Length: 303
Ligand SMILES: [Mg+2]
Image 1 (cartoon, rainbow, N blue to C red):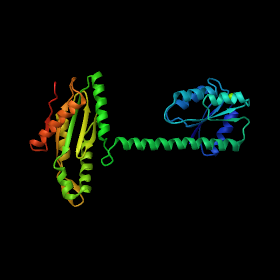
Image 2: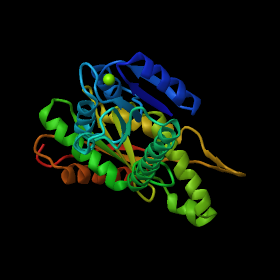
Image 3: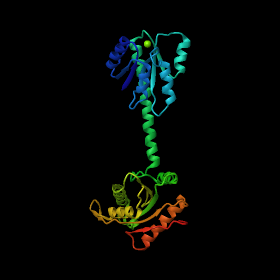
């Protein structure tokens, strides 16, 4: 684990550096408070810091305050190094946001175990963040295909529509439904159906650009949101249709032809998300009705 050592005394700095290196830490050392703050607020900052109290630039407690004011996701554990032993001084340091303090001249073993306690806190916090990220992923993504789930893709649509109102970048949606998918499930079972869904999701994603987002809207239905300066929904829908139908999906011994029907609709100033989605859905229905494996444009009310 990386650790910052900030001390204006080179003797103290070198001593500390040698010590904590021996305990397995990677050391970054600086000789004043301003540089300490730069390192702690910079990219890939150390999560553990030993700050001398009195330093040029910013004092140890001042660096603490700045770090705590900045906030942010990942916690920085700060240990103040001080020659001061007055109770008020200690309180001042802790009030500034330090987690712990060690009085100079310090005992090596004491410093070692205090750093270990800090390290444990940083590691625990990392585990919490990882767990939270995992839950967030589960809450926003479809477990089977890994695509965004219905709630999340619709949230993205709402955000893109908001952005479109303040910029001139057009927004559109494409609704896609795999043709005769129920037949696959009924004939070969859900495992095969799932394999087809995964393959379809991959094929859709393979032709999308960075400005397009796709989610599984439910069952065998997918929702694409696209916003780009030169939005050509018909071309995008046709590209997606071809990508899906290009070759059959092979599942074990089975070779299954897969096609999709698509309806698309472009946002106009007066439409809201419901109107836009309804237009795309009606177009999708028409694509089914007109023979499947095809795309149809939607008519947005009032546009
Ligand atoms: Mg000093």
